[in-house]
Structure formats: C-alpha cells, structure tokens
Image 1 (cartoon, protein in one colour):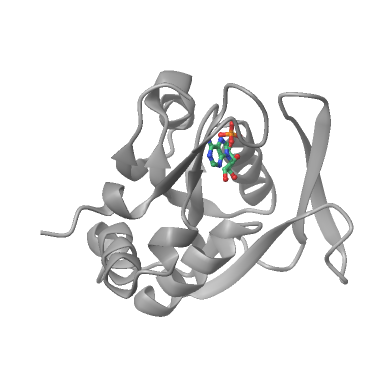
Image 2: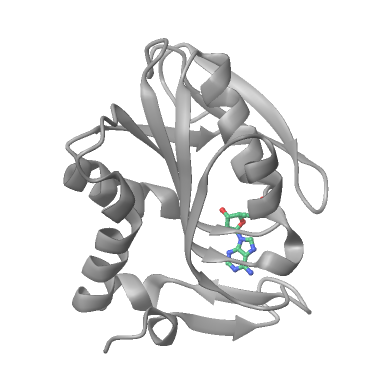
Length: 176
Ligand code: AMP
C-alpha cells in the first residue's frame, strides 16, 4: 500500500533554522502518489454540488486544478498582491515576520456559489483563514477547506473549524 507520507520530502532548517519544510514536489512527481492525493482530497465531495475550487498560490494551484477537474468545478486563483490583471478584492494577513496581502478577482465567484479551498499545507492557519474571509466577503459559501498536510501542533485546522469551515487533511506531521 502506497503511503503518501513517504512521498513527501522533509528539508530541515529550510527556509530558516528550526523549520522542517515539507516538500511536496516529490509527491507531485510520483504519478501514483499525486493521483491518490487528488482522489483522497475529493472523495467526500464527489457527487455533491461544488461550483468552484479556490487554490492558494502557488502549490494550491497545482492541487486545486486537479481537484477542480475531478469535481467538474471551475478554478479560482488566490494570488499574492499585484499579480491579477482585473479588479480585485484583497485582504492583509500576518506572516511570521510582517504582513502580506492576497487578492482574488472580485467577479471570480458569484454570490452563493459553493467553493472548496485548497492548499498543500495548513500550519498556523493564517493564510487559509485570510483566504476564507476573502471568499466569504464576495459571497462564496465555503463548504470545505482541504490540505494534503496538517501541522496539528500549530492549531490552524482547529482555528478554521472554529470559523465553521469543515477541514479535511490527509497527513499530519508533529511539530512544525
Ligand atoms: P500558515 O498560514 O501558517 O497556515 O502557513 C501555511 C502556508 O505556508 C502554506 O501555503 C504552506 O505552503 C506554507 N508552509 C507553512 N509551513 C510550512 C512547512 N513546514 N513546510 C512547507 N510549507 C509550509
């Protein structure tokens, strides 16, 4: 049986000392692991009405595109500030050091559309929480947020659940 955890490469002390970087490029490069990951992410939602998948730049684009295809949904990119060409809505969120901004096109989702948020990993949940707020601001119903990797010690998934968003993760790593 293929273990998805074995397909993820861990790089200690990247991008800075103390961080265990969970590198999914090895999983994406493994045909069976990539396919299984996408299958497992979508499994609870197959057959349900999902209008759009929103992916967070950049790894959320790769996974989100595949998830959108599988669920016959549209794809919406949530990007770093200044990358989208049309009118945007934006939200500031805190990173470990300082503040960043993410944006999406203001017409990317229609009011009441059912959206699933996708990213590779949830840590503190700061990024995903901002993305959920942005989606809700333009009227999306965020029916779930899905991630390949959870770092449960950092509490991000619980934080999203406390906002009323169901969360699905496939693999957990202890620590950070
Ligand atoms: P957070 O906002 O703290 O939940 O961080 C989540 C975002 O940062 C995701 O887009 C991840 O890709 C990235 N990230 C955070 N921690 C790690 C880690 N240990 N390994 C790989 N990516 C990470």
